[in-house]
Length: 363
Image (cartoon, rainbow, N blue to C red; front, side, top):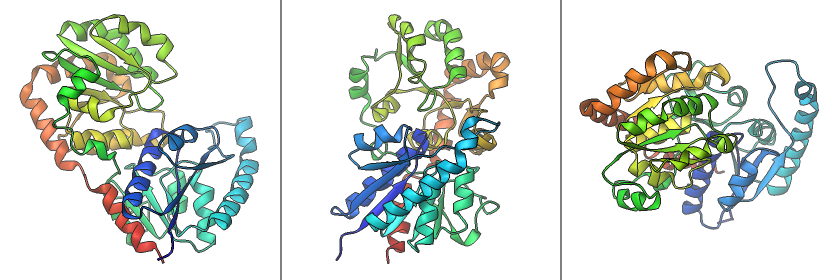
C-alpha cells in the first residue's frame, strides 16, 4: 500500500489548532508511516504550536477581513491571491490524498485549491454558528463534520456528519489524576479549586472580573488557578503573591488542571465547551461578545438549555456574578446536576469518528 499523505489546515486561535492536532495524532495512530503537512497563517500561533506537537507547517500570507475600513482590508485581495498561489504549489508538490480544514483563514485558500485539483476535502466545524470560511468551503467539500445539531441552514444537509469536536486524548480519563495534579500545581488538598479560563489568548473582561473578586473568592476557602493569557500576564502576575492564587499565561497540562478543578469560569469557545462537557465540570460560561456572529453565546446556550452549565453575558456581570457564583459554590446538588448533564452531551469518540470519515475519502 502506498504511503498516505494528509494536509491539515486551521489556525488563528487554539480552537482551530488543537482539533487539527488531535485529528493528526489519531490519523498517525492508524497510519504510522503517513506523511503530514500543516498549513497555517504566517504570523499566527499555529506557527509555534504545530511544530511543538511534532508536525511540519507552512505559512500563508493571509489574514481575515476586518469589520471596518483598514489598511489590512485594502491588502486582502493581494494576500488572498498570494495564498491561493502558494496553496496551489504546496498541493502540487506534496500531492495529498485528503485535505482537512478545521477553520481559520488559512484553510480557505488551501481547501479551495484542493477542491479545484479534485482532491477530497473534509471540513470540521467546531461552532454552533459556522465561520465565513467554512460556509464558503462547504459547497465543494466532500464531508462536513459538525459538533452541534441543526446546521442544515448553513451547510448542504447530505454532507453533514454529527461527530462532536476533537479533544485531546489525555482528557478522556482524568479520574485518577487528582493526586498528581495537586502535587503538580502545589495545591492544598483540603481546599476547593476554581479554574479560570480566558481562552488561548486571554480575555480582558474575565481578567478584570477576577481581579475585582479575587479576595472575596479566596475568602470562601477556595484556591484559584487563573489562566489570564499571554497579553495580560504582566498586568496580573503579582496576584500569585497570594498563596491561594496562581496566575499563568498558559496551562500546558490541561488534563491535570481539569482533574483538580471543582468549578470553572470560562469563555465559550467551541473547544473549551467540548472539553468541559467531556470532563464534566460545573461551569459558568462568560461568552465573548467580540466574535463573529456571537457564536460563543450560541455555543454556551446549547449546553445551558440542557441544564449542563450556567451562563452570564458580559454586560450582566456586574449585577449577576456574585449571586450566580455564590449559588454554584454553595449548592452541591446544583454542582452534581450540571456535571451529570454536561457529561451526557459530551462526544468522547469525536476524533475517531472524524478519522473514520477521512478514511472513507481516501481514493
